[in-house]
Image (cartoon, rainbow, N blue to C red; front, side):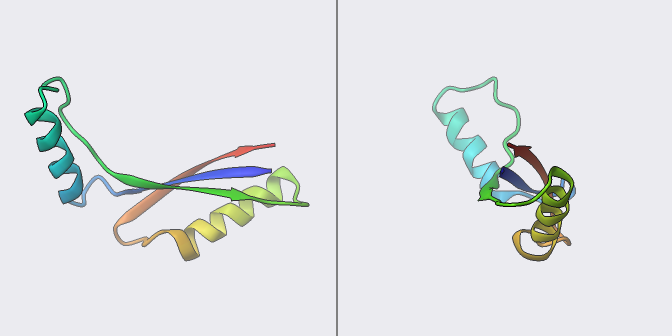
Length: 80
């Protein structure tokens, strides 16, 4: 089973890297882009777990290791 964990800054946290990317896109003529928020993707392969156990494992990993809960949030997708 594979999991993709998406980690992003909370909406209430300023994203200076996203603002820099937005400015670069605007200077390249991409005027339709109004906001950019940057983040991280983690691909994790799990073995020998049921879907519900895999869900619990990924949530624990994301909370304890992959995110800073003060400024970041996460979501994930599981694939068999």
